[in-house]
Length: 114
Image 1 (tube, rainbow, N blue to C red):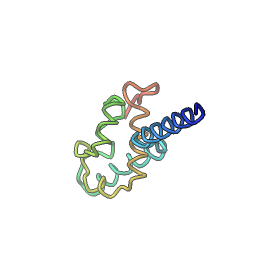
Image 2: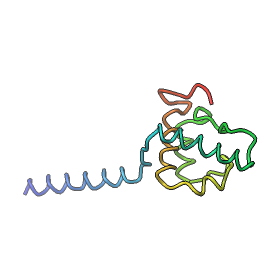
Image 3: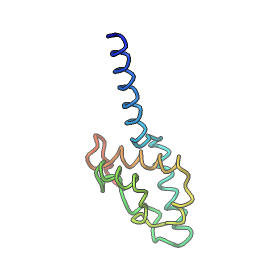
Image 4: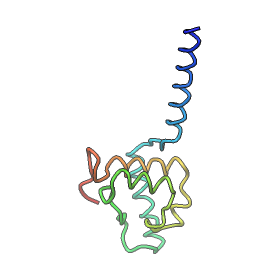
């Protein structure tokens, strides 16, 4: 009887922890994210939509919680270059999120320059 209770409790624990992990944002490749983030603005500059190839928002401009909130809502309007952001696939967006999150203002390794 106690063995069934223990097995049931363990099974519930694993189910709830798996659900919790699935709701967390995925981690991508931050090096690819940095490259992709800069590539988006280079393409946007070449199209004539912005005045600079340099992204307007640095990773250190926001905290990790702010980056997580922004990417959870998928509200990329403040970045500009809507056409380029619409053309990114989920993997590229995840990589950019990881780059920005890992170098946020309150991260252990904040970005020092744009």
